[in-house]
Amino acid sequence: MPTAKVTSKGQITVPKEVREQLGISAGDELEFISVNGEYRIRRFIRHSPFDRYRGYLKQLEGRDPDQIVRKLRGHG
Image (tube, one colour):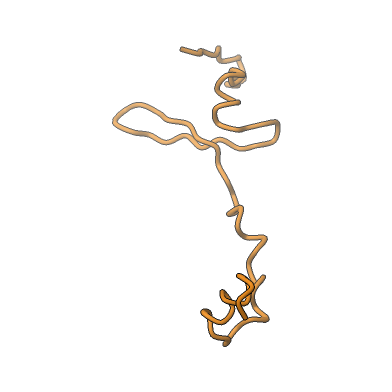
């Protein structure tokens, strides 16, 4: 089980194995969640990774969804 020491400033270095499993890198944020007197950590995502797609289909507003899907599949 990976461990980390706390510095005098209250900082820790997250072990490489944990960083890789959480998919975190320099500059990422971690969230500490209290569960029954213990803490869990997870990568904190400030924005949804899907935010960049918001409004992507705006020009198709009001059109029949079935017709759009058929066209995307090459049937119409």
